[in-house]
Image (cartoon, rainbow, N blue to C red; front, side):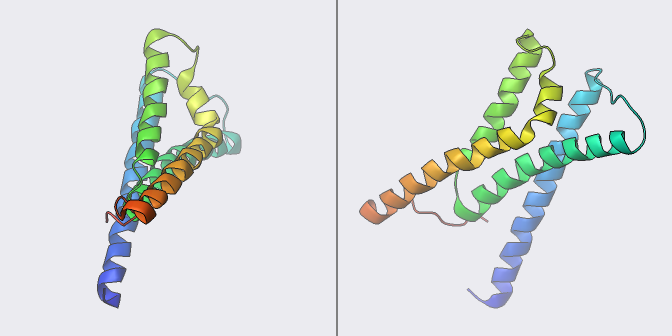
Amino acid sequence: MSLHSEFAVRQTRLAVVIIGGTVYSIAVLWWLFSSGVSVSGRGLAAVAGMGYAWLGMFLTAAVSLYLFGRFSLVSPPLVTLWILGNTVYQWLYGAHLHPLSSYLTVWPLLLGVTPAITLGEALFRTALDRTLGRFGLRPVF
């Protein structure tokens, strides 16, 4: 692969990660505000809280997309969608009083689940690649 095409692949991957993270974070925050949740407080504390929530949603999607695009790992996007789906389920059926605000507050813990599960997939696929010569970790984009 030439230096120019490798640079183009990295740019494409970066663009997908940034756009995907931005779209995901905007969609989740839109859902939050359209559900009647509001930010209490004013000034720097409110801005810091919204920045924390936005960063969490951005990283949740961006990390998953990066791991998928760079190593073809399917568990990161699936874990992200599963966690979001669980939040939607709790919101729809009242299983949790405030699932959206919890989702936005504890995102570091939820984001930590993704690499843990991803490590298992990576080890399994590496073992398959070494024994069968298939299912190795290769870039998707």
